[in-house]
Structures are given as C-alpha cells and as structure tokens.
Amino acid sequence: MIGNRNDERRVGAKARNRRFESQVVVVTGASAGVGRAVAVAFGREGWRVALIARGRERLESAAREVEEAGGTALAIPADVADAGAIDAAAAQVVAAWGRIDVWINNAMASVFGPVTSLSPDEVRRVTEVTYLGQVHGTLAALHHMRKRDEGTIVQIGSALSYRSIPLQSAYCAAKFAVRGFTDSLRSELHHEGSRIRITMLQLPAVDTPQFDWVRSHLPQQLQPVPPIHAPEAVAEAIVQAVRTAPREMWIGSPTIQAILGTMVAPGLLDRMMARQAWEGQMTGRPAQPRDGNLFEPPPGDPGADGRFGSRARERVMSVSGTTARGILAAVALGCVAGAVTAAWHLGAKGNEPDRRRLSDRERAARMVS
Image: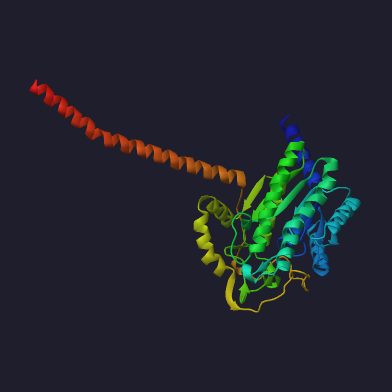
C-alpha cells in the first residue's frame, strides 16, 4: 500500500511538472538585462517563451538562448509604448500557442539627471515606456486571460516604487504609478471574483547593460546604487514568485530595508538619499552626457549582464510584502508593549516611597495617640 501511494505521488508530481513546463509566458523588455535573464530561466523550465523588445538583433539572440536552455521561443519586435503593437503581439502569441498563462511586464526606460535638466519629451517617454508600457501589457494580457478566467500578470517594480532617489525622478514616478495602477486592478479583480492573479515584484539594484546605454545628463559614468545583484539570481527569484503569485514580493535585502525604512523614517531617508544615492549612482570616472536608448534601441548585443559582475551578488533573498509588513507591525507592537511595561514599572517604583512615607505618618499618629 505504501509503495502504491508513493507511485501515485510520483506520477502526480510528474504530471504537475509537465503542465508547468508546457505553459506560455510573455516577457517584455526581454532582449537584455533582467528581462533576458528571466526569459532564459523560463526556457530552462521548458516553457514556451514569447520575447518582446525593440532591438531585433538582441531579441533574436535572446530567443536563441531560450531555445538552447530547453524552451521554445517566439521573438516579437515591438515597443511597449505602442498599445496597438502590444495588442498585436499578444494576439500573435495566442495564435501560435493557444493561450497566455503568464505575462511579465518588465520593459523600462530611464534618464539620469537632476529634475531641472530634464525635458518634457524625456519625462513623457520614460512615462510611456515604464508606466504606460505596463498598462498596455496588462490590458493585452487581460483581454485573453479573462476568456479562460485564469492566468498570472507580473509587474516588475523596484525598491524605487516606494523610495524615490535623486537623479531618476521620471523613472521613480513611473514605478510609483505602476504600483497605484496595480492596486486598483487587484481590487477590481477581487470584486469580479476573478481567478486571474496579479503580483508586483520590487527589485534591488541589478547588474544590467542599461548603465552603459541609458540617457544621461551627468558628467560621470553610471552605476547601480550598491549593493548590486546578478540578473540571473533575480530572475530565479522571479520564476519562483510566478509559481506562488504573492500580492507583492520584495527581492533583495536592500529593497526590504529601503521600503521599511521609508515607512518608518521617510524624512531621514530623504537626507540619506541626498548624499548616498547622489554619489552612489556615479563611479567617479568622467563621462560625456549621451542620448542613450530612450528613443532608439542601441546597437550590439551585450546580453543580460552589465560590467559590474565582479561586484554582483550571486544570491538574493526575497520576502512577501505581507510578511514583511507583519514583521514590522509585530516589532512595533512589541516596542509599544515594552514601553507600556516599562512605564508601569517606573510608575510602581515611583509610588513606593509615597506608600512608605504614608506608613511612617500612620505610625507617628498612633504613637501620639
């Protein structure tokens, strides 16, 4: 009997794995950086992976990596800022593979420089890619997922979705907007009783090629604010989050610290960011301001990783936002309880001399009488 039950468990596990491997995932911004690492990670799991990005050369190279890893790839050149192009891309995936199980909104754009150095066109473009790109992807995914009433939508956020830093105001604002949009949609899905899952993953600083091609108005070479994490480690955390689809996942200890720190002491972090994040985004080596990839994809194929591999962490921790907030609340309640207990003890000690003095007076009165 025990042997039969074990055999049944093994058969069931294999069936679940086969179902998982046959699933379809769409990844935007899949030609480089985190998006490319995520696409390849799903390829290793045997998934069918649709890759969306602007740069055709890098896109086709990433698709080859997915297939070499064991997946099936479909490369679709498109700009996430173009809602019609993203709708067409989603339709192409469904026409090829019948459905979309997971849609990962990862594409982003940024511009480095003080607010006063930015042009309205630059801010608009960052918003169209980083915020509206996720909106367009979400709407395209919902159009097909609602027919089956199932699927998972993943918004790739950042610690900067909670804690803005200097020199990237347009990008931070767009990430904040994604969080607001996602929270509204989540409530609407609950109202409908929908089985579609939506999760937002807040990422730490990652070693990607963007720091060599992003638009910059700064006089020095750029870098992620340390500590820096390898894109492959972050990609594995994203794949795991897709399986469980928590409401929100905070990836990397710096993300957890930044978000909780903002909740507890935002003013203190404002002053810290004024110093540490300003200097921390530059290497100290001189550079010329550049147009970057804001409006046109750069040439070449750097892959997923940037130039900070020797400093990048190969492991990354993650925790659900719900769990982290619960821990913070428990600590806060513990502090309050401790303060109340301490105050009670101090009050009790403060009353002891009064009781002794009263006893002395009572004894004196008895002696007089």
